[in-house]
Image 1: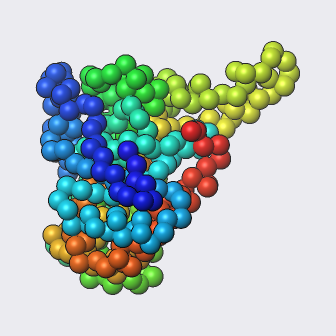
Image 2: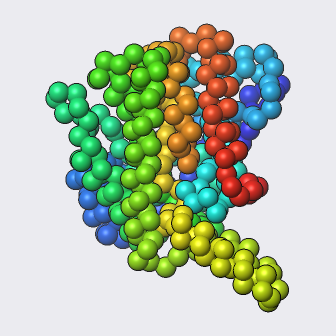
Length: 335
């Protein structure tokens, strides 16, 4: 699944779990209903038709490359994807290469990884006076973590690799959308510093809320296996050095303990107001993508009117933000 510099290769994205929903136990549907009552939307892997994704390469590509890619900007069900890394919530774990795209939100993830996905639209929590109902949003976010954790215990994964990944990492993709719509409702200018600061503070609060809930679950559960298996003292011979490493590792784990390797997902297209052609001014919000553990690339707005310069600039800036996430990881990237 790639895009070369000479031509664009169209790639059909498949999650590998579409057929599995028909065999899910009754508890799954009850948990999905719980999400809906909290104002969140469960993302069912068998809801979406086949989509095609163009994976944007990491190299500094020339004008011919971008011109080829730009030709597909208005083709239905064809999307670009450029989130090459998935970032962990726990700094003791490594960033991972994301070489697969799963439906229906177009989440770019490691191959054969197992995700419980749900979506929260911020505009559902705006009161008539334009004020965000933070209490209701907090309840919804916490419900997403609680229900997502339970879903990992009851979902039937279709392959052995996905079952192992679900046990190892307990990944959640809580896709927060409606960022551009929220700005429009509040009548903020998309290119202003105040707009960026407002949404940045809100996403910091969202991320902290999710982390706190995941940590609360972790404190009364068995330690996430991915964290346990990452202990570097396992590879050291029995000695005082090994015991010192083990002690330091336990202290680091207690300071950053979570129950889910990944939590927050964002879409670059949620930066734009929905149901309207993408206003390029909202591209000033791209720095917000640094909060994402993973990115969803199902395009929900039209960019048919963008010229080649705008298209190239948007993708290059977005990729630069997403790559900076990996540079902040404390542990070497896992390839």
